[in-house]
Length: 302
Image (cartoon, rainbow, N blue to C red):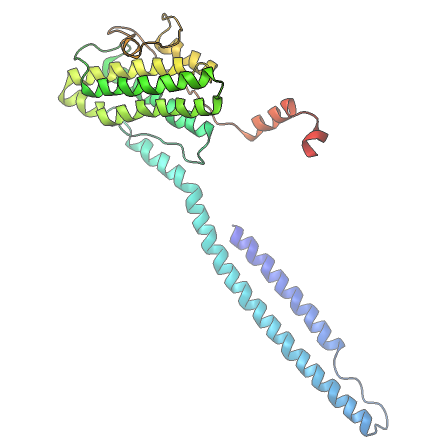
């Protein structure tokens, strides 16, 4: 579409150049011969004719060059248009393909949100996806209750050690009011949960080792609760939504003992899968909030 518009604009420009050049050729042609020309007058007419010939030749070169440039630019614009179209549509094709692959038996697939690395993408991709994947998978395999069976192993002990270290650093950053660094640390904590889920591969364990699958899913549900508690100072409303879904009867308190928190939701505890935690902001949202919180229009444009 854009290539066609560009082609039409270039063609119009080329026609305009030709018309202007053609008019200039006619206006700068050789002067009409005067009656009774002498030698000087003949020489002047000869020079005028030479100038007209040179101008005509240059104009033709300009037109040919313009035509060549138009063709080259059309080819380049078409190529760039196809390349940009592929890049723009790639996330949509990825999401469509992944959605077709996902089923109750293939919940190892993950829909990562494409886009620049920023806070909103991190929230949706790191925290939102973990909550959805873990709770949806567990609900489909064991129902609305935390599964029983099995005992934590080396993977869970290493997870607890890593969480203990990260949570200690995160807590210290919050106490020191270093909120930007604290947010980065919180994201790293969430990443530990995603890494644990990927490494443990519960979608394979449910078929080969039910007790091991129960441990992974039970740990995952408790991680969801723990992550929501840790997120409460940063995104309190979202944290409340998650806690209301997985631990409505548990008190909301800062996690001081990681080992206890990883077993807070015992087998048989009920949970639900919350809805979409982070919706995409629209242009209308941004415009409305800018009008509401952006201050006077004069100040924003200054």
